[in-house]
Image 1 (cartoon, one colour):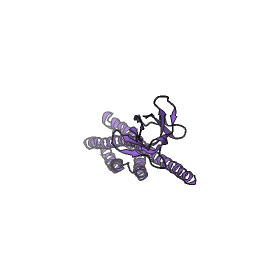
Image 2 (tube, one colour; image 1 turned 90 degrees about the vertical axis):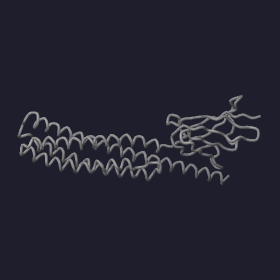
Image 3 (cartoon, one colour; image 1 turned 60 degrees about the vertical axis):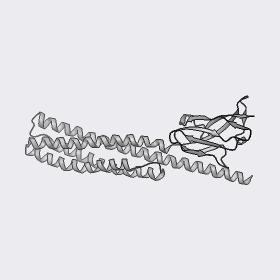
Image 4 (tube, helix red, strand yellow; image 1 turned 120 degrees about the vertical axis):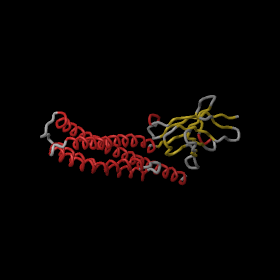
Length: 266
């Protein structure tokens, strides 16, 4: 009895630890998403300021266009872009450390590109200010195009980071599943230990997960997906299969999704 109690306690502790680790990864991905959103907002803010300056100088032919205001907005926004690019790189790295299924390279590469673009926005904006002060319209027009292109790249990559961070959350979410048996004729409950064990096959990847001696009726930390749940047949009995797509809406108050298999015996 002590051995069974100890095994149950160990499984429960492992379950709690895994839940905490899972939540930590999700939090890191949320931080990645939020940091990318800040980058998006600031890049758009700079682009809007550039548009105001462009209209004033090139459309309204104002040789005294307010370059200073644009430079001030650009400087503050690009400072934020630089800071939160580092935040993206850090948090996606943390998420990858917490879950080996997460590859951070794509998001980190995009964040590094954004951070590099920030330097070019600053350099070209300084050159734009000089061109406008000298009323060199051709040079100013070309620099405006280049700055706009850099900002559009920041905006596009920030959106892609947000999309990727959201998609990666599905890898961070895992589910606990418990098998329950019911008699195929009467519908009465049958102890899950009546059969030797159970298997769960991921329908997308083909990966198979098995129950063990201590957790004979349950699966811990199954990745999100659709699974076929099967029972090992006994000498004269067995159970039907069931295909279930794991979803948060199926999780009970005890943290488990219950999969019911119909028990048969000869």
